[in-house]
Length: 504
Image (cartoon, rainbow, N blue to C red):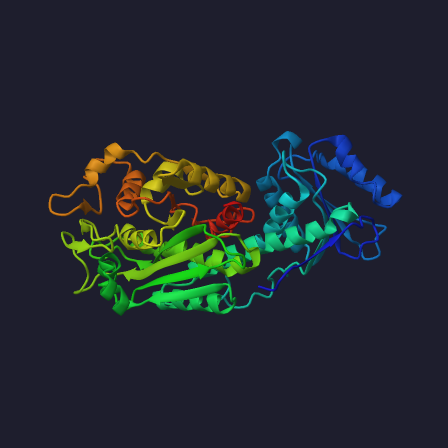
C-alpha cells in the first residue's frame, strides 16, 4: 500500500492547500456553527443552511459533506459527528478518522486538513489522542490485494493528511504522537498481511525468516532460532509432537530487544504460530478449515510488535517467542491417546490432536520461565469456546497476576481492542488430570468452560512468573469490514502490546 504522509500544522483557515477540510464535531448545534468560522462568509452561510436542511446534528457516526463554492478547486468540507461530548472515547476518534478517510476516498480526494483536537476524551491530552486519529486513517485504508487482478476503479490512497492543532508550541509533541500512531498502525498491518496470506505462502519457515528480517533491521534486536534438531536436543517434545504430521519443519523463534539503557526488567511475549491447522488426526470439518491459515495470528502479533519496537523504544528488555509449525494428518502424525513430554518434563496425554495450540505454547511458556522474566503475556487463537462466550469482537484475558492483567486491560482500552477477564477457576483443573500422564490436553467431556480449561492447561507450564493469557480466537479475524477493522486478519493485539510495553 502506498503510504499516507502526515504533517502537523497550527494553520487552520480556508487557504490551506488541500482538497478537503475535515472537522470532528460534537452533538451540539452551537459547537457545529462555531466550527464553520474559518470559512469564507459565503461558504459559511451556505454550509449552515445545508446543515439545517440535511438535519445534521453531530450524532456519532454521522457525516455531512458540502462543496465549497468559494474554493479555487471546488474543495469539500467534511463534518464527522462524534456524538455526545461526555461519551467521547479514543475508539470514537478512530472510527471518526476512518469515516472521514473513506468519505474522502469515495470522492477521489487524496489530501486532507483534519481538525481533530478540539474535543478530547476525558483525562486525555492531545498527544494521547493524535495516535488514535492516525490509526483510524491508516488502518481504514488497508486492503490485502496481493492475489487480486488490478481494479481500475480502486480508490486512491490518501496521499497527505495535515493534522491541525492550533497551539504552535505543541506541534513538536504532535509530530511525536503522529509517529507513535504510525508505529501502532504499521505493526498491525504487518500482522494483518501475515494472517491474510495463504498457508502455503506463510509457512513456519517464512515466519522464521520474517523474524530474522526484523532483527537484521535494528541493532537493538537479535534473533535466535531453534530448529528441529535443536528442539529435539533440548527436549521440546510438545512442539515436535504437533509438527509430526507435516513435512514443514517446526521452529521456536526467539527475538530479543534490548534498550540502549541497561535495565533489569524483562518481559516475554509469546505467540501461537500454527500456520495451518487441519485438526490433525482429529480432523476438522471442511468449513472449519476455511480460515485456519489464521491460526498463527498470535505469532503474527508478536512479529508486528517487534517490527516497531526499535522505533517505539520501550525501556524494558522484551523477548518475543514464536512457536510455529503445521498441524496436519499423515502416517507420522500424533494420534489420540499418545503421551508426549514437554520442555519442563511434564507429560501430556493427547486426547484430541485439534487441541494443538496449547501444546506448542506449553513448551514456549516453560522455556520462557528459564529466563526468570518479570512477566509473560501469550496470545493465541486457542479456543472456539471463547467465541461462544464473548463473540467475534472480544478477546478473553486470564492469568495468575491481577496487576499484570489490569495493565494489559488498560492498554487494550486505550487501543480499542476489547478484552474481558474470565476467571482461572482452579476447581476446573480436576477435569484436566490424566490417568496415565500429568495432564490431558482437553478436559473431561461435559466440563464446559473450554476457554478456562485451556488456560488451566497452560498454567501447568508457567509456575512462578506473573502471567497473562489472551485468547484472541474471535477478534483475530473479521468476516466483514467495520470502520478501521479490515475483513480478514485484524492484527489484534499489536496496538495493545505496544502501548503496554510503554508503561511496563
